[in-house]
Image (cartoon, rainbow, N blue to C red; front, side):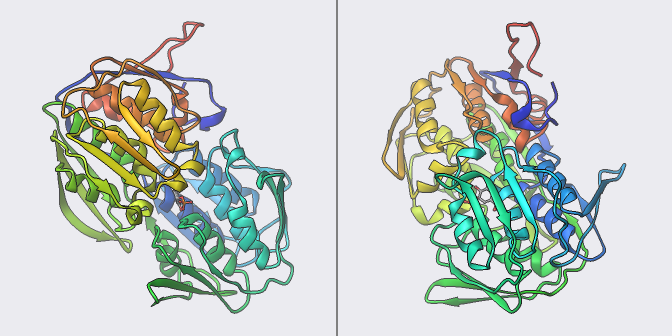
Length: 461
Ligand code: S3P
């Protein structure tokens, strides 16, 4: 089986991480997932041909590619790996003949719902088991304000039918949760409404949509009022095609980085990583914990800061990670909790309510899996406390289920690399949703990750 599948639809895969040391080498992780979704979506709307280099060709983003094709855009992968995307123009979406299945991708479905909410087309969205449990009301509520008619399953989950507004009105919306997905859905819907749509963001979260909209020539303005960012977008203005180069995903870089910090005698460089300040909460936290991570060659590319991360095995100490940092590292808590399990002292993480509505309930799944690996953990509604082993290898030796969550799978493989006993991860096929080639990349650094044979004698990789 291959990691370029569609993630949730592929056969069960079981991987086992064996205690390893001396990880070494220079690697580049695949393109950033958030930037990739947005490049495909804005390209699918813009006039002209957008060329995207370094697109993350993982299951989640390929769902967005398929969705944009179903909505009338033309998207082609050229032999050199560059994607050429010709857009449909503002409110130019074609009504798809079939249901659009977003697989495991919350970002894909929520942003796409925003895109179509102000065009008079009917679109039905579905997803896999994990996505079908995640809340959609957070977008259906603001998108209805534009005049879209939206139905979901009882409980506000997928399947979701969006009938875009015939005569949309602009909206002013204050984000009730710090979610870049909700912010982006509203801004993208605003492109199809006359006048100015405003999103008020009390707590800053990733800003790739705003940055990329600017690059595509949209009318975007930002101002601060009483500590909240107000983002204004002008509707009914065409976007113009761009050249986009997607930097490496810091949320993927987190795994080789964590493995290098934990496995003895390691020295690893991860090149070309996106270092947008709304994404670097993990690096900041690890610096506070005493990690040896150096940022080399910081540079600007396509309106984003990128750099190379040089990391060495480090003794970590427990800290309190403040709630206001959560949006800048929201996808990194499972791997941070794994790192904290090896630290001296206790690490307390606060402001974690959003973890409960990710690909799985990451707060309770992370805590349970750590306990299964012999780590002491306490949790509350929106916090977690991990007692570190004081630098010694934690026990490991458990079988962990990914719960349809790529980041749970990768986090516990990292734990297994530094534990006393191997850790087995079931449902590791989910890794393909965000990090194709994860196993190969980790093996290239010297990490021992093996495919476990299933009952039919088939290897998992
Ligand atoms: C994303 C935003 C985050 C993050 C997700 C990607 C995005 O979700 O967890 O992996 O690309 O906008 P929320 O904004 O809902 O927290």
